[in-house]
Amino acid sequence: MTAGVRPVTWKDVPTQFVSAGGVDFAYRELGQQNGGVPVVLLVHLAGVMDNWDPRVVDGLAATHHVIAFDNRGIGSSSGKPANTMEQMADDAITFINARGFKQVDLLGFSMGGMISQEIVLKEPQLVRRMILAGTGPAGGEGISTVAGVANYDLMRAKLTGQDPKQYLFFTRTPKGIEAGKAFLKRLLERTDNRDAEIAIGAYVAQLQALSAWGQKAPADLSVVKQPVLVVNGDADRMVPTPNSYDLARRLPNSQLIIYPDAGHGGVFQYEEDFVPKALAFLAN
Image 1: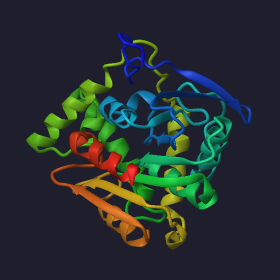
Image 2: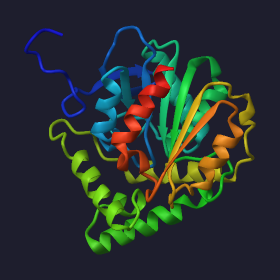
Image 3: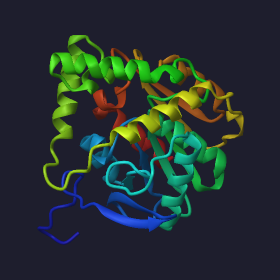
Image 4: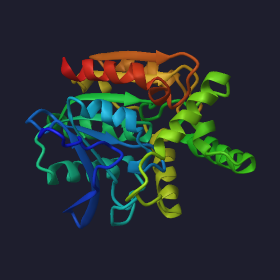
C-alpha cells in the first residue's frame, strides 16, 4: 500500500453491485486480495450488511479477502426474497459464481450458518472451510420456533426503547448487557452510504424459511469433509446452544468453541478472542 494511504475499513468500504440470475446483488469487499481464498459472510435473520460487527470484519480483512453481500430481495439487493434456505443457498451460489470465485471460505452467522450448510451440501467443491456461529442443523432444537422468540423480543424492545438485538443476542447479566451496548455502538460507526433496512415482506419470507428448515428432516452431515469451526455462547435463546454441540458432533472435521455468559451473539461479545481464533482456523 502506498505510504500515507489509509486502508479501507468496514466503516468506509464502498457498496458495489453485480448482476446475476436477474438480481442486482449489493456487496462490499475489502482486505487482502492477493489470490487467497476469499471469506464470504452470510448474515442473520433480518440482517443486512450493516449488521456485521466492524471489529469482526476488519479483523478478518487484516489477512483475508472478505466479502459481505445482501441476498436476493434483502437490503439493497433487488428481486423477490426467497422463503426457503435452499433458495437462499442457490442465490448465494449465484452471487459467488458471479464474482468469479472458484472456492471460498464461509462465515455463516445464525440463519447464515444454515444457508452455509445448504451451500456445502449442494456444491461441496465450492467450499474450503466454514465457520458456523450461533446456528444449528436442519430439524434442530427450537429452530422452527425462532419467530416466536424474535417477535417476543421485538415487542420487549419496543416497550423498553431498546434495540431488539440487546435481548436477542446477549444475556441479561451485567456483562451481557454491557457487551450488547458496545456491539450496538460499533454497528453505528458507519455513517455514510448505509445499507437499506430489511423490508417487512422479506423478514416474513425469512421466518417462513426458518420454520420450514426447523421442521425439515436432519441432513447427513457426515458427508461434509471440510474443516468446520462451530461457535456459540452458552446461553443462546434464538438457536438454542445444544444445536452447536449437535453440529460439532455430527460434522466429522469440526472444532467447537462455547463462550461463557454469552448468548446468540457470542462471537460479537467475545470478538477480541473470536477473531484470532477464526484467523488461526482459516490459516491452517
